[in-house]
Image (cartoon, rainbow, N blue to C red; front, top):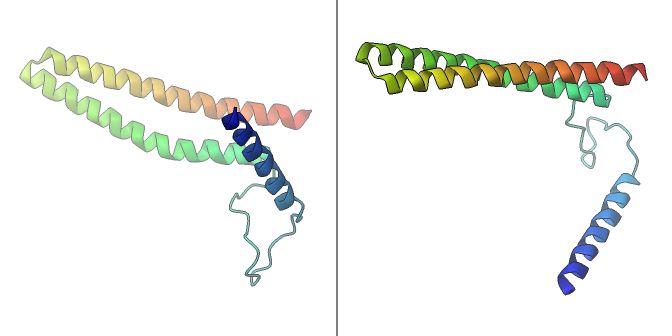
Length: 122
């Protein structure tokens, strides 16, 4: 029973502290003010934030996908040279899942853009 009370007290304390932090206002920081922390998110609205996140994920995922495809090609070649069916099967699996992952990243990016544009029309 005391554990539930402790969690409730922590939750209420967190809400109180966050409410006090929000009550300070959101004025922009001046460059020389030591008490002001600038906003690290370079977005003015939620739609821009979603687009920025999707862009960064694409920027990370596409080079990784290229490396995975090169690795799968290397496995194909070494499997074909040695005649090892296990390496060829492994290369096919790597190739397939790399394409699936890349399609998911592209699809998520397109979906994020569509949701942002739809929300903008409301």
